[in-house]
Image (tube, rainbow, N blue to C red):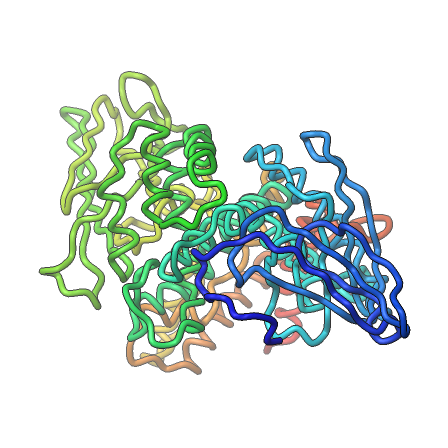
Length: 570
């Protein structure tokens, strides 16, 4: 593995021409970065392969593979009319399970061309899947290396979740070709420049290929349960850390997942068209360079003629901001007011904390679920920008007190303190046109109901499941207009980890019993509806990895879970 001396820094870049020579019987496959220039037989049973990568890259993207592998291949023509030979290499026993990964690669290439105008830049693209690779996957230029787990998938051995995971990881490593390889990091402190951006890109890819609503819910659920805990703990660090002792400890949820949320906020603030303009300028300025997070921010700002200087704090301040929201309504003046206050994370010294630039996507609804115009322009949704510790937003001409849907789509990675009544949450749960906030309202009210049952059980009182909650779940169950995958998420009660996140002095067994009680109450009261929806969502024909089939299976399985829970728990 010691090939030559080379400064192991991401900003030291060079083009590489590589000639590999090996015993053909032992190593029939010889791969390196770039394009295959020539190959042939040598004396004494040896053979060679000469590879050339015309694009400058740092040493961390260099790779060679020699081994006894077999492959599948496809040919792809880019949007620029350039032919590309695609190959996936694997051990013989794994080859039959590689086709879905190949199809995912082709979808990734086409999506990147359509969404960001980014076409592949070599005549060959190779993926190597091996059982012994000690990382998940690596984006080496033109020669991605994968653990077999993230490549192999076929109907008789994989679940829907496995297939979606393969598609996402294949896409992630391919998207690094531009966001990480063509433009790389000046130093490892800038790791989120490539990883946060590429995670955002793979999230958007999966959202377009599968269910956008469910993908957003899954990403935020993971962020809240894992990254928020990291942000609030002793290992809390900004997405662009100032120092490290061990570089391997840099690969954190904060760098990757919070980094992706920071990139998503550019998209929220600037809009999809504005974000694309920023990406175009970023590549125009920095293709072939090793750059910083600030270079990306400046490209976004310059392309859209926006001041994003305060947004830099997302890169330098650690912890999860807490947002407190209070509302007031004056029926006489028909004026509705939201008072929004930023508070420092609990693990950050208040005197050193500066107000962040936070996008708050907002809509208002009346009691019947109709969206209300926010201003004289009759806009139904707006991204309000929080830049101060305390701000007020006033909405006039509101004949009734509206129901506010704030931080729609989870428009910023923040903790939201907004004390809303069960009646308001029920309205959002039924009518909110934002899929994430509709799900979130269902989760909040479910959590409240479970914790009320928990309090009664702890006090040796009888627990109950309110009739209004049963009717709300019935409404979701009988909704035939909404994506079944979203309904499956809305019907799923929050888990113990979520329930315990805001609790102290937890009696786990009683909390578990409270959740079980609510679940069984729903299963008993709505048995007919659960059985009906279960029967309606059978998928006929052969197994296919199609979004509509996956959605039906998800909803069917949630209904089955409730039905079996009623039978299996006394």
